[in-house]
Length: 511
Image 1 (cartoon, rainbow, N blue to C red):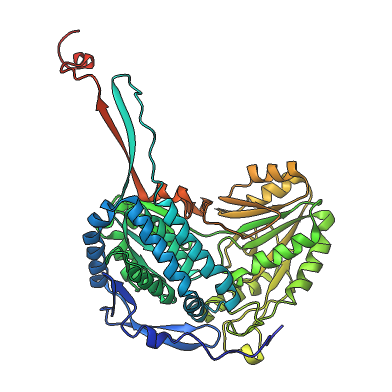
Image 2: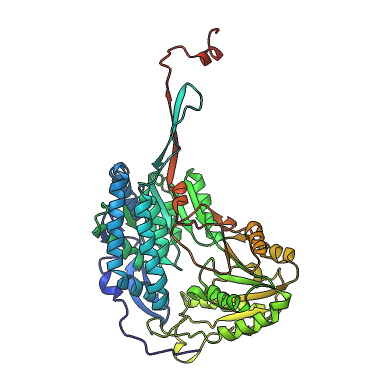
């Protein structure tokens, strides 16, 4: 469907708001110094909405130096002091929610109802969560494990973190990178995608306005090849966290390994959506449409492969296609829009090419084209359902990152779980069944970092997010993320006050 309503002209005024530049270093905005410019493009219209100077290696060096200078003071702050600062930060973000939502919709093409009801509230909640979690950086309780010594475990911040965030959820990914790092006492330099820097800049400014010290959070907006690789390889960066494609993640790992950095990778996904024959069919259909089209399918946890047990297969295909056809494409700022454009025309064309190649071996049930008419200038693509593809085909095995769902049948439970695990990825999955034993088996045997039962997509700040296999390693969100952003130190005290220890005889003398 098209044209759900009249668009509002109240787009976010990016060029005015970020006139000082797309870098944020030592508590203030700055221009990049690479000598090259880049344009943020509204993917709904193709119009350039903000042009800025890209960061070069000198800007990365300045940001790392600012983070390094801020580290001793921030690391020495008490957990309570860091917690208080993060609580203030959450309050400032909540006050600026509408600005954040509009900026995110402008640069990404997300419908306002998604940014207002998902991206921004989730980020505010995540900030509030880490405000509390900052007080609970606990090690193991003290104990006399050797008999003659008391041992305990300290958690200490690592130092300067250099993180790279993707373009699909710029605000949330900035928060996922920044919040656990600074809650644990680290400082950070974040490189957002050059397509979508606006909300990362707003996020950093809000932190400064909340009283978080200058240099604790820094933003450098440049290309991956120049700014990103320089940040990852910087000798003063102690840890790298990257979210993005598996191919780029491998390159990040190569650079980080050369300087023996702590590394956290959240990479691609190809989430299976397994529907057993006792599932609530209507619930599964609605879950498949929502789970595959969230953020126009540009979500590494989006439902991309629906495996439906044979008795429900034909009905699932028919009803899912019918429901997809009711989804309203339109201007992200129009009140009735369900689905916005993809991030760029290049991404739209990439998705279309996957679907066009699949026509040679599968059936496009609905969608499979870009809309015309009023939306022709935007990077839109219709919700697409594909059936009849083989398990080893490109459309089933490769990450498409668009509004495309592939449906395949299966017969036995063994086959369904085997097919679900039959890709290189393991980020997320879901199982649909009314049988608790079937559902528990699926959660045990599907190899993914998150397995939902009778739902797909919801995330919460208290629970970890991260993958298996080619989807990377390490966790975002939750207290588990502190495993990434802290050093664990064993401290051991002698309790005997004896100069000559019994074990010394293994080196010199006799008992």
